[in-house]
Image 1 (tube, rainbow, N blue to C red):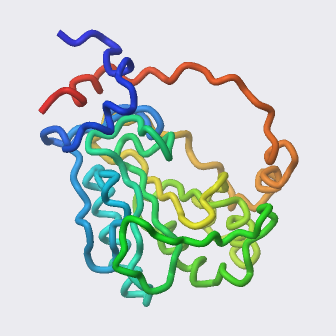
Image 2: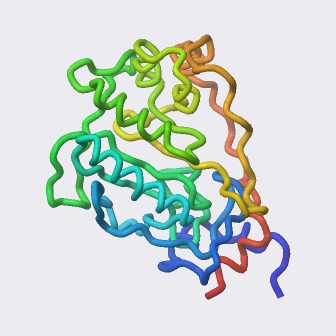
Length: 260
């Protein structure tokens, strides 16, 4: 008998130790930052327009809507003249908390796509992805960030099912210059880090009653005082907060972790 909350007692290393998904059908349980997924599917290691990097992490699993998005988006990018895309972390075979690198990517609806637009080497584990942002995060690096980066982000933001795209706040500001007021800019959200990749997040798919949706994206293009805050002293040097206990995973995740 599984006791309510059993999954919460399992540390992230146990979720990382699950080397394969549980049996189908696919079922999302919980939220992007606190949940798991049953019946996840693997993204192929490569396909038209994309290459999975750092495959030894075993983080190339997701809900079928996510793997379909990645393959479809990569194909559209290739048709638009982009070099093959490096695809980073999606999620673990059964989702759940990751031991390092992310607080989200837990329910198979998040994907990291690197913003390296050049030709790709055969090396997959050790990739070199220079920052598109100046030291000190005052602005994008004008020698590296180009309109083609903006075009790739826009292509992702205008894709069906995409709810949010997280990029460094300096990248968001750079996009606001030529693209202020455009509808797709609403989905491009500023965040820390994310200076050489974009984090694409899909919303809860239809027929997923156990998927907890995020609050709706705020109205407007995001090129307002809210963006200015990211450049403030408060944002750059936040007051330290004592760490709290990890969130309690949904009880249904227990059977996902230990099931077949």
